[in-house]
Image (tube, rainbow, N blue to C red; front, side, top):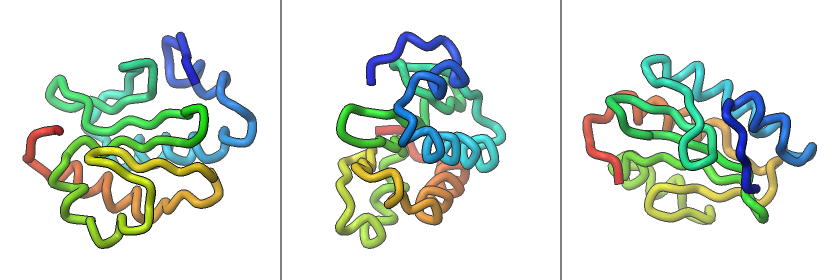
Length: 120
């Protein structure tokens, strides 16, 4: 989804109805587990910034929901848990909002907070 939203609230009002619940839940997890991060719209998606760098983001894409965990160390440390998921170096893609593993996302967010590694 290409969005010109200036705030996360506006972004969430523009997404397809079938994804609203999932993206709101992702946002709530980010707000809860990334308390020292600033929420903003960067690259036209909800993003969570610490030390002037986006460390986490999510987006409603045409075919899937993307969750960006940009501390590559965190993704590498969870390689076994990511097996079988559609993912890349710093992104997990869910084609079905009902299949999002919120427990995994929560753990990745917690590990992001604790990581001193650079972003990918």
